[in-house]
Image 1: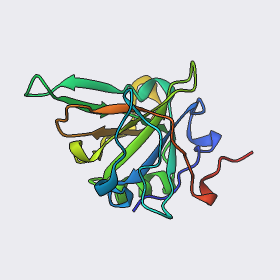
Image 2: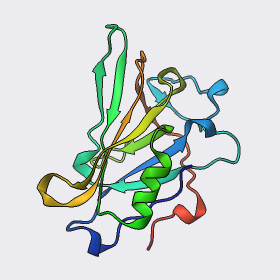
Image 3: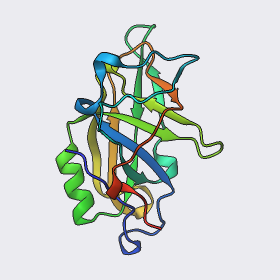
Image 4: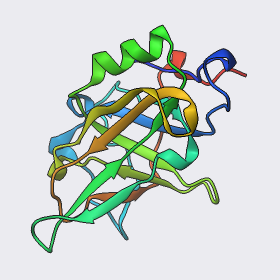
Length: 173
């Protein structure tokens, strides 16, 4: 079960996260009516009626979206590797509750605000797992995550659709 995970307090990290990704469980996605992309862009919601996105703040350089070739030369495998700086009761429980879940993810390019979406039904969503809980590169405590899909001919798209976030997921002012 996904729930909202705000930035960690300053006592649990050295630098504050600057990067946000939005996640929805694949069960909350309308897989039967996944929008047809136009110019590699999804411009409408992919969620079932009444469902909303949740977010996760992580370090900006850790997201590292990468679509590597699959076994078939026609397919790619999308992987994202966000890092949550700091370990709190809420962040650790969030990871334990969501490990093994399939999700759809939206991420944003900081330079121009362009959003992307990965984890479409063709890839069976992106499986969430953790790669490290404890001391990360640079000596900072935190949680390394991996979101990885299955082989798919179109592992991600641009996303210009709505991004309705759960009300209690709004960032603190």
